[in-house]
Amino acid sequence: MIHEILKMGDPRLLRIAKPVDKFDTPELHQLIQDMFETMRAANGAGLAAPQIGVDQQVVIFGFGQNARYPDAPAVPETVLINPMITPVSLDMEEEWEGCLSVPGLRGIVSRLSMIRYEGHDQYGQPIDRVAEGFHARVVQHECDHLIGKLYPMRITDFSNFGFTKVLFPDLDPLSDD
Image 1 (cartoon, one colour):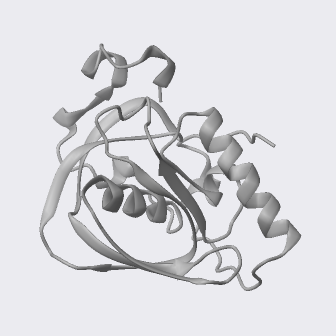
Image 2 (image 1 turned 45 degrees about the horizontal axis):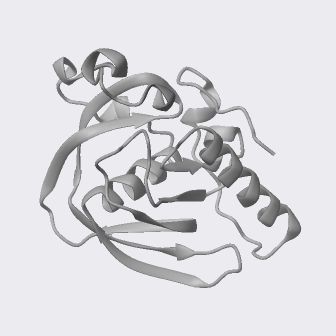
């Protein structure tokens, strides 16, 4: 089922999500299926459960190619529950970000360039990966939703924040975020 994606200003996006304590349940599988359907319908690169009003530490991400980020490399399709992020390097990268909860806008955000992320999949199997570049950015962005942070809260220079159609007029018109 495709859910409505909450928009910036909705107080539910500012809450701290609760850890998942039961894996491999019908409810969890349904949530994840719904999240993937919702993310794909919106051409998203990722989605966090709080974005559809579910107060749990569940994020999904991944794509082969994405109309909203045409130059981005593929990111493996992943279900990540109760995530922990550890820096592998303290190097930072600045890049444009958008968000399904902040439609029509983009901004430059500084993120760790290489991270290790750990957590579990929906079956309770451990996940432990190192990611860099866009993959690392997507993970950090989605996990921010679990602590009530939206990417505009991380922007330090608002001269690099604006409407997608103005900043990127050649971007696919179907990819309006």
